[in-house]
Length: 510
Image (cartoon, rainbow, N blue to C red; front, top):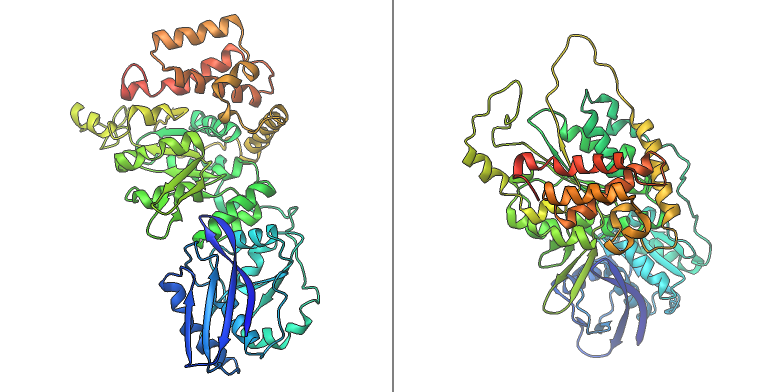
């Protein structure tokens, strides 16, 4: 007897509909799985066999052939277990026949009969919905992460025996819960910008970065607050939109990462160690998985101790910063992951960290400083918008006066973001950092004096043309923070200041 049930598999972070064809026939008992399945699927034979037996059903003593179609797609993972088990039970007439064109099954079978959660369930559910599936049976472990998907029935399954016993009631609507977007976000666990003593210029630069989605580099000695500032960035950023939430959750679901903060609407923050490998940073591996730059999609990628990263690893970030995506090419196929993130990096000014300090003596030679700084190439620096020098703050016995709070910073950031959304509502982008050269003349109109100022910056300060474009983007964001329609010279001067801070360490020009 031939039975067909529907399931799904992943190609990158996108789901692809898969038909599980189960055929039972007379002959020597056997169990084979075909359809370009890797070893993780071949092992499903034993998991499914024991799961069926321990759930109170008899495993058919027949020749069983399972085909995963289309056979041209390479398949891996344990999410086929549930659909294979259901197909075998239907073919053996131990449960009611499924509606092959309306229902799909996702889950891993455990030996005791439970249906376990799987990685990448959310993108699979989205793909099944697009393919016309109306009802999906999935593990209780994956149910909550998929509740944001509308217009499809999601039925949580605890174990195989209960599923079969209640399958005839499948048309009974399952309870559907929505995420309360009005629930107050508890930012206190992230800290507040008012906790930081001094560093007003760095806080201002972080507000600009958050408002316009600009990349920034914090330069300062040990203990000046670089990491504190980076960790507080989500408290001044806008919450993720529903579309951005789905995009970020898809990537985190495929990677098997927690989704609670993204469900709340908080942008993801990734802080990889400087010993990270190339594949872990940009994605790849034997089983191609998203890297840190994709896990930071619509959020922040914080690279602490930037010169300690392998230089060749850092160079891999140049294209994703510009293109907002990374393409992993393999002999069989190419997989594309999104990577639209704000890069916040931090570094010491020299190996000992005391170069330029008013209170400590630097023990590094000029050659050591040059070798340390040369880990960050010119083309990579060219893709950074804001360079911020952070000075040491002296300790005082008196409690330091609290500065501007994250709530106040976030309020003005949201106003600036709304200005951009209104301005670019007819465009394919929505932030100042995405302005291309051709769009600058339309949205960053400059007066004659402002154009002359940029010309002088290009010639006298030796700022590259790419950096001139970035300066205009930053000036546009500063103007939005000031609620100004026209970019003024003061906005350009502040933008040039942030870009020109790098010359103290890397010479007289970009």
